[in-house]
Image (tube, rainbow, N blue to C red; front, top):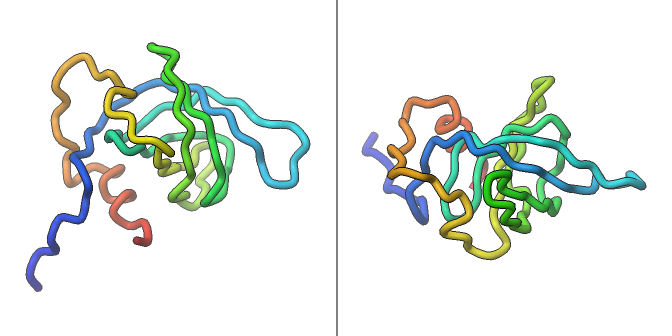
Length: 124
């Protein structure tokens, strides 16, 4: 079977960036807040490791803890919840090329990384 053509819009990098995540669970009166971190990032979003379960289509506000920059996101992918963590793919509502502010040139994400395998499994 021939290799599939690359369908990504831009490169992804493995990066552990601490973030604050704010959201509102469907049917809940109060919003939630948690400290989470990224596993994989790009200029269009990230794969976040969170503890609060969310649903595809939910809107979240993600704040980079180092820069305090905020981005509104849409949940694009949720892996089955494996307590205590859930892997959540988010897409920025507006492209944010500098949101992650990585201090050095990141190494491209390893194709064999767990995060890479999870991200590729999501439905397109």
